[in-house]
Length: 240
Image (cartoon, rainbow, N blue to C red; front, side):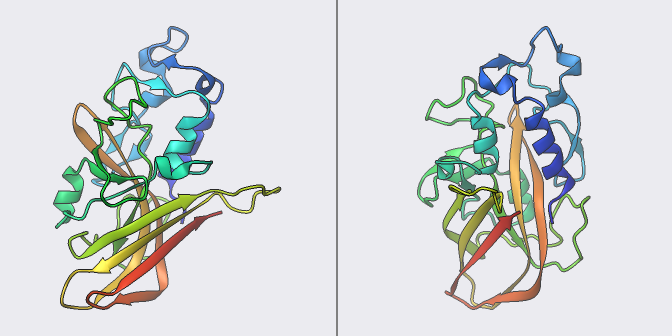
């Protein structure tokens, strides 16, 4: 299910389409810091707190040429440049909430810290706009609602490790039949079967070193997936 966080982020991006064609300073005099929509507490993070996309950052600049949309949702060409995954050292939900390390580009060996991207894509250290979404798995089965902001029961990556990941968008489709696809492969690192009942997509934003994790998609599987020890299983989310 597409959650309210996702819908609000889409609306926020589309409301800045004109400004996205060039670098526009967040403190543009036409808007003013207090009234800029990027500073509105529109989203509910994993802890249930209301947060804004930039959490009061006054130096953010909107990326040009539509890359903001691309890097946020991996819906255009070269999507895997911005696609991310959680690292394989997350042993608890508390670790997840404090995490600012991510795999990039579909490769589990290319790890970067969230606010220190070495590729120079952003002009400042807060790249809340640039980090792409990542998959999260859980074992809860409460039916999803648009107001969901976390999984029922997060499964750590020390138990189900990421083996590879990718995303993509529609190519040469008219009309467009889907928004994007996200595929992740997981390996059971434990000695027991693990049952996956819920799958989601999340996105991390942060300002001044404080992470906020936004759940964008949550789906409860009609047929839970049982992963045996050492077994590798893939999950795909298609957004239509």
